[in-house]
Amino acid sequence: MNDHEDAVRHAEFNEEDIRTVSVQGEVSREEAVKALVAAQGDPVAALIDLGR
Image 1 (tube, rainbow, N blue to C red):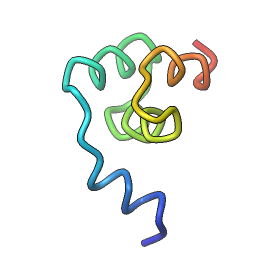
Image 2: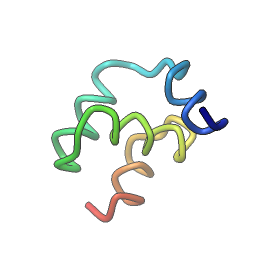
Image 3: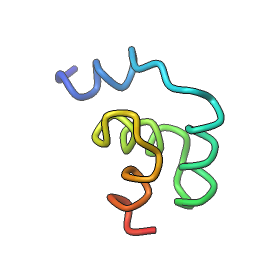
Image 4: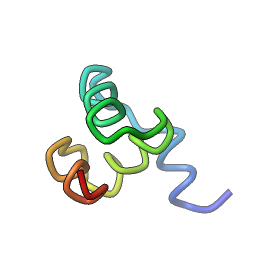
């Protein structure tokens, strides 16, 4: 497991933010969490990074 995967496993985000990124970004929950990790927890930035 690399550091990114470890961060995803241990990331704690608001469930509403995860759901919003998943639904609006049309991605899986795991992909939404990864996007939130990359965006430092910012759901708007996560969606922008996903191109949505």
